[in-house]
Length: 280
Ligand SMILES: [Zn+2]
Image (cartoon, rainbow, N blue to C red; front, side, top):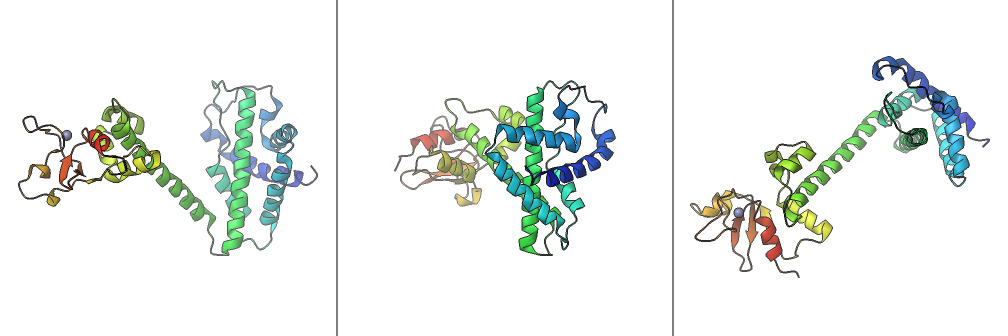
């Protein structure tokens, strides 16, 4: 691999130099357990060893790795770069840290190698993306702000999926929906936090994504002012229960029956409403 050593020696050395300064505070104990595996010695040489081992195993990956690496060298070495190589490498080290295995960790050497290679590849891809973005965006490009924006987008996406999963567990899982307690423990929320985390919008979105919602379902969030003054639907669930034994739970949604009449509906009666809707 004549084209690669220039890159794979240059970049990991940078990481290693910067990492070693932080090692004392970041790594508990500071002493890694002795590992006979040569690839776990750390440093640029180990990275190179790992890289070559991986390429030996997967000859098809050779060309891809090579082309990415070359892009990176060219970009980083370009004299007119606004962003210092130092900053980009710092961002890469923060965004994709080298895997850390504590002394009592029992991860097999092969899996450790894979984890390190994955992190190394992710860093290389990340650096290539940043340098490409910088070239296309011009001098106004700020890789730190760009990285922040990327992570915020990931966080927003995860938050949305968490809300959808909570709605799914609460409304769609049958015959027994997950309890607010169980969902809250898994999601790091209080039971009332779970209840507030999703509404009609999330429920309908789950239905769209899974196909579980009957097409004729009409659900929206509850607003007391949408019902006449004094109407029971302003405060409590009027969809569930019966005339003689009304549901007294707090209204969370508004549902619409076949005649177009709107009713207030609680969390526990919404699954029944959804099941009762005709499919279209
Ligand atoms: Zn109810």
